[in-house]
Length: 247
Image (cartoon, rainbow, N blue to C red; front, side, top):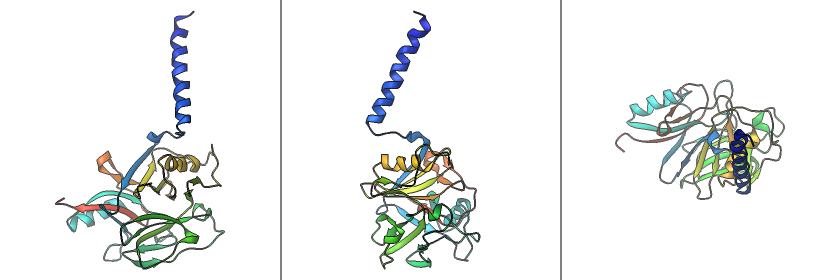
């Protein structure tokens, strides 16, 4: 037998075995395709930002970072937090510091990803719990500190959105958020273009029951602990973790 085949056959066996083991474990998505970051809202400072105290939209992480530094704070993590209108105002529900700044959008048959029903809401309660809820079942109560509406939902009670197609060629850079079994928020952004099915599969693989798509090709992340500082871009809501410069 040719010596080359003596090398190829064992390699093929290892690759096929690796695939079968991966499939058996339910890991059909390569997690290296995504950058993820876990936050415990009870012990980390997670807030949503839209405009500064002068009413000027932050637009990107560079401006938010500079503003925070002027207040003696450091930006730890940031991600664009949902879709927005042409004037950079939030599309759909937006609550900041307990104040309702944009109402819930209940339109059922609009155009675009936001209206791919069901869509949902990511929110933080006053007692520092992170939640993802269907828009239609979201209850605007006095216990909400921050909330942003987006769509579509990626996972609904542990199941991938029924309209997502495996192998779809509709691919973009995408970012989103899910809730882990321990109650922490898991933020993720794809390193390369990915379809909705694979993106939702990543959150399911991580154990999330509910997850929400935030946005697509405009998406950015700031995470210096992983040597990623995407300070450019223009968007509406920003979700960010901060800390005191003295910490």
